Image 1 (cartoon, chains in turn purple, brown):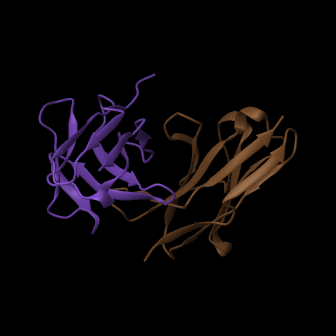
Image 2 (cartoon, rainbow over the protein chains, first blue to last red; image 1 turned 45 degrees about the vertical axis):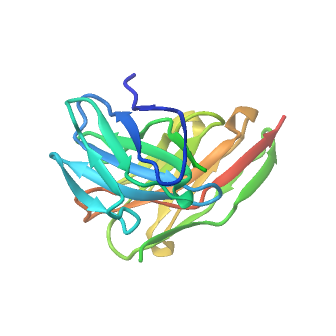
Image 3 (cartoon, chains in turn orange, green; image 1 turned 180 degrees about the vertical axis):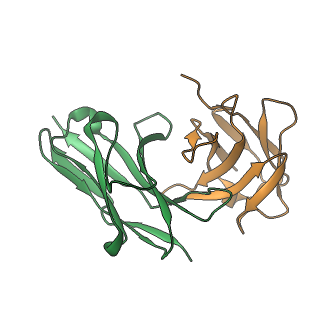
Length: 112
Length: 115
């Protein structure tokens, strides 16, 4: 069964550094998402991406964040200058023509 | 703002006990409703979904949920839990009118089933 994959599984970075989190959505899916979950809190929507552009973003998704689909398979989330409060689990999801989203295993980002 | 509430943060049951996890949402329009499960060390998996039609929906592993529009609720049930049901359970909603389909999650319920 096709799955969403994410790399790395765990990323440790210093405050102020740039990080890129990578996702490979399910191959025939058209809609892509990033969510995050800070420890002990809800899973929060960050951004959705369709037809090579952002279709919706939350207020969390400020100028420090960007997304890209550099080729036909990868979907990346970049944080330009990480802050301590960016420490969280980041989930990528994708969906096809249906409404259900399929999630990757997540990347745990630790900012020190 | 649209929100989703899960009433129970942590539930402990013995095997064979019945389960009901509450979920309420605050949005007056058409909604699509989901329950996701996250087993220890694994990713979020879809348990079941409701878009329209019969308000009682059945999902994988013997789970079911009932959409009660008048109560803005979508409670998850299982008649007899197993130890392997130990996991975190998330209720989530999308607006029916949403083009993007972004999910709004509840805070999650941790279910611990004792053998």
